[in-house]
Image (cartoon, rainbow, N blue to C red):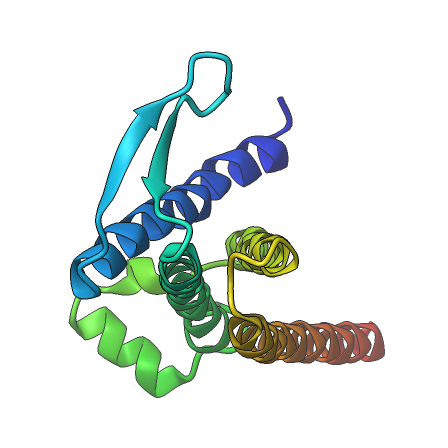
Amino acid sequence: MHNSLVKLVDIALIPAAIMVVGKALGLIFTAALFSIPWTVTQITEAFFNIRPVVSSTDILVISTYSDAFMLLCVSIGFSFVLVQATKFHDTHISPRLLVKLSNNNLMGLVKSSFDVYHTASIWLIFSWLALLSVGINIAAGKTEIWLGVIGLAVNSVLTAVLLQDVYSEIDLTRKNLGSKSALS
C-alpha cells in the first residue's frame, strides 16, 4: 500500500475508537446520572450483535446526552490536532517555543506538514461523521435538535480554524517559492 494510505488508516483508528467509546461511555454515564435502567441484548443476525435496551420514555434523554458526550470527545480530540497544527507545525513554530520544547526534550511534538494535515483531515472527517450520526438520531426522533445546532456550530468553528491554518500554510509556501525564484 502507498505510504499515505497506510498513514491515513493508522490515524483513523483513534478517532473511530473515540467515537465508539465516547458513545458507549456517554450511555453509561447518562444512565448512571439520571438513574435510567438499561440492559444489553444480543442480536444474532446483526453486525453489531450487542445492543443496549432502554425504555421508550428514556430514549430521548439517554440518546441526547450520549451523543453529546460522543461529540465532546471527538471535538476535544480534533482540538488537540488543531493546536498541533497551529502551534507545533514545523513550518510556523515560533523560535521561542522551539527553544522551550528543545530544553524540555519535547521536540517530538513538532510535526511536519505531512503529519499535521493527514491527521487533521481524518479528524475533520470523523467530526463531521459524528455530527451526521447525531443528525440521523435527530431525524429519527431519538436526539434533541439543540444538540445538532450546537454540534454544527462547534464543527463549523473547528473546520474554520483548520482552513485558516491551511490557507496560511499555502500563503507561506507561495512566499517561500517566490523568494527562492527571485534569488535564482
